[in-house]
Image (cartoon, rainbow, N blue to C red; front, side):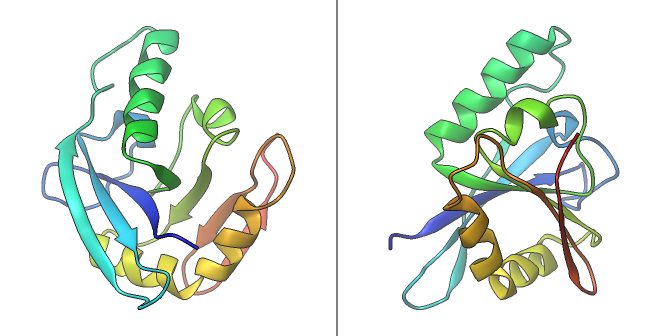
Length: 140
């Protein structure tokens, strides 16, 4: 299997804040090497959908960017209105930490769960919540 990427939603101080994924100031794109199990930051870029109020335009800008970056998982402290569209293309992960390096450790630790969800044949992915443990649930 090839390497896998995720996008971590970051705020002003390069930490995860309590804002919806689509409302974060920037994203850190992280790659997990399936062979070596190493994690590396690919880039950190401004959120292309930040400040767009039209939901349809916001979704297009965000999803075009994520597709271009070959992202499979989305990590944030919370998700907003676009989650019902996002989980059709990406596995959403709510994390309890503010520190992006801890997010990478958590996602790496639970990569088999995330990959299992990614390979499911459903029309939409379930949401994960990772903190001291891991929980998976269906979005309404």
